[in-house]
Image 1 (cartoon, rainbow, N blue to C red):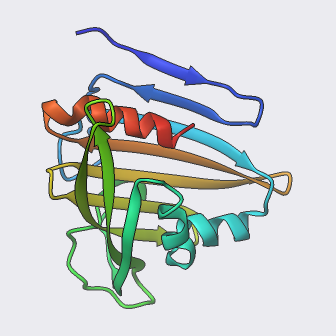
Image 2: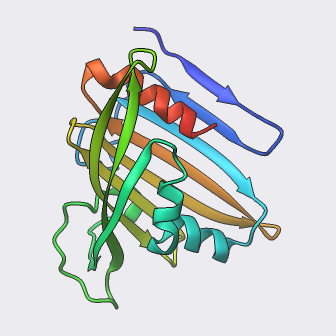
Image 3: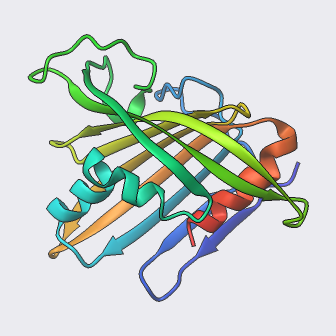
Length: 196
């Protein structure tokens, strides 16, 4: 099996690497599954950390950010709770954890659902994928964890790290996921497009 890495360095400050072959899951991270695809992306935005984190990292801008994708539609926010984790947010999964925390000891977690209409067979056929998931964030450490599970068996664990640099905000996104081998090339293609 060959290993392919795509690197992009457009002048806009974006940096993206898509790993198109599986890599061993880190022993220190509990994704809740064994990944067979991953991607990383980094961008520096011309806005202050407080604004970027609120928009991209919390429920405040979650619908707007998710529906930026032309594939996404029928977005719904459900209930919000607070979850207590036994590991840092960037080392665990929060989607299936029990709601056992108070607002003083836990992290906010927003449940949501939406659908994506994904083109297949050179765009001749489109399939609808229903996704449900959670967005959990740590305001103090400036981390946001997006986790979804689809009716097609695709699971995604996406952590975003936010860092302030000279009045701007650097956002580093790491995606790990698992899908059926038949869908892998389509999932990787859509991940690549989302990072361009």
